[in-house]
Length: 165
Image (cartoon, rainbow, N blue to C red; front, side, top):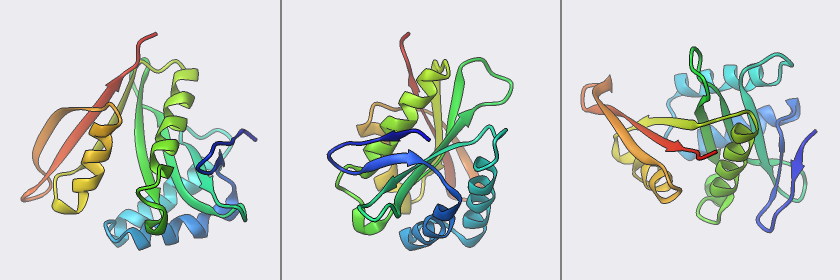
C-alpha cells in the first residue's frame, strides 16, 4: 500500500474500512445530493476492486480515519487523459490544505501513469463557488461550459490542467 506523509496529514490508498467515513464526509459537505452520494458509493466500492480503473486516495488523521479523499482514473477512449471524479474533505478540515494535498497526490499518481491532461467537471451553482476557486487556485483552467447540463440554470463547468513531460 502506498502511503505519503506530509506536514498536513498522511495520504494513503483507500481501504474498505474508509467507506463509511467517506460517505459521512460527502453528506456533511452539504453540497452533494443523495443520488450523488449513492453514485460516489458505487465508485468507492469499485475503486477497491483490484482491476478497477478508479484510483482513490484518503487523507487520514492521527487515528488513521479518513478526513478526505480523491478519486481519479483514465478517461475511456483517450491517450493520456485522466478524470478527477471526486474530491471531498471533511468540512472541519477544509481550508487547511488537505484538499490541495489530495489533489497533488492525484496529479502525482496520474503523471506516473502517463497523464498529459487531467479534466474535472463541476456545477456552476453557488454551492460550488469555493470548489471552482479551488481548481483555479491550483493551476486548472476553465475549458468549457455546457449550459443547463445538470438542470436548467445549472451548467457543467469543465476545468483542465495540461502536464508537460
